Image 1 (cartoon, rainbow, N blue to C red):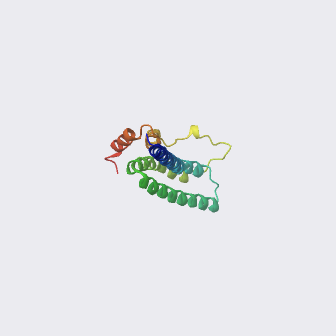
Image 2 (tube, rainbow, N blue to C red):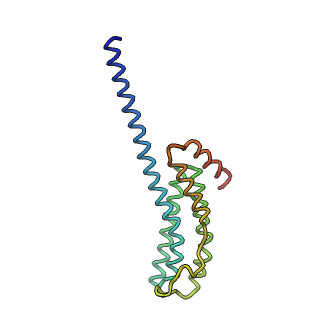
Image 3 (cartoon, helix red, strand yellow):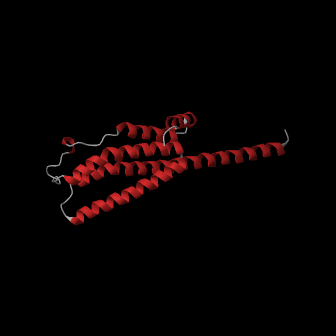
Length: 171
């Protein structure tokens, strides 16, 4: 074999290896960035439940009520932000996130309204295990499973199909 061909083959192999390494590294960075977004979005969704606890433990001052109300507004802005961001990554994962957020809110909202009407609970006597709490473990697990399907490279093709199939009829 001519040395020119050997040099050309080695050079093209090196270029191909560099391109492949760059592509795989970029994909890994993007997956990691998406994982961070999904974790922050989950934190925002679960913060709605935390707001129930804040209302229950509030102080009986107008200032504290105003602070809590402002926190609700800020939280709603975060939920809307993550809803749009996740939807832009994946329509199916966006549907899954919406299901989780809707369930967290629908199970928390009546309890939050009840807590606003009730007398605040002092920190010393507060025991969440003795109180009614929102339940949304199925939707939480579904979203987490969908995030794993979206971010794991080894079974992404089949997982994406399952993610799409599981969320295809929901709005």
